[in-house]
Length: 334
Image 1: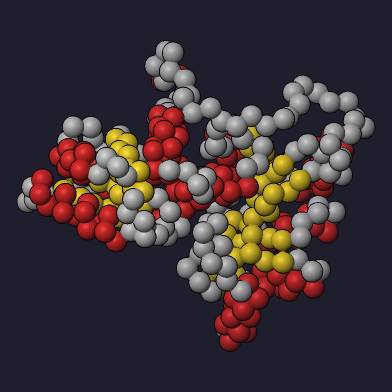
Image 2: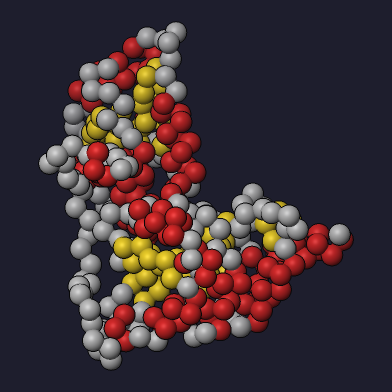
């Protein structure tokens, strides 16, 4: 596995390391190396060397650094010059999209070298610079990272048309009270590689502000839609969606149950987060359930639905029914 060093002036590297872990999960063979105000060039180079020595494979190292020509870059460049025979590379202008893409590349491009990953992530890093409102972008600025083009039809498709095998493909169905956020837009979308992200919610489908925000948060190359549960049931039976690979997002388990009862072919539910509110009990850091949720998960279990309790793809799954039973016991005490 390619080792990754995040290097910066001050604590920036520590912060982006923490942010990357929140979004993509804890990563092996990644170290943050900082140059603090009371330190000099030798100090940061020593930190980098210690990080390299700790990696499983020191022959393959990617340096992601904040600033070209700064001290962290200069010291990494010295190390690079001393190890020209190794698969080492440096990329400057470090930002969070770059770091997430580097993590993704290590996971999906398993035989890729550090130099190949370096080339791959530059476009994504540039594409991460955007403005809102969008018309503030300088004239001529365009996305440099070209999104994968999915084979999707354009324009109206006559009713009754059968595309592919006539059945929508559900790459992931996730329950997450935050719906489309960083972990979904980066880690899960890259793992599943859908061409559509569909938020299935009666509540959100009637909230124009939330709908707009979700559509704007969609990753490059992936369309985001917000539809009511009834519409999702119709989509699941419509042969025109036979070439569609979707990532479904539900705000609550109750919404997911209604969709499944209506005929949406979901065999496994990924459980991401369920926000705490009055009447709920916390069963881990991100999941809070009330008695209605407990009964809903009981019913889903009886229907043969499997549960995959993970915030991000790299996490180890938890036992959902153990968490449900924990909530049941605490709620019954009240």
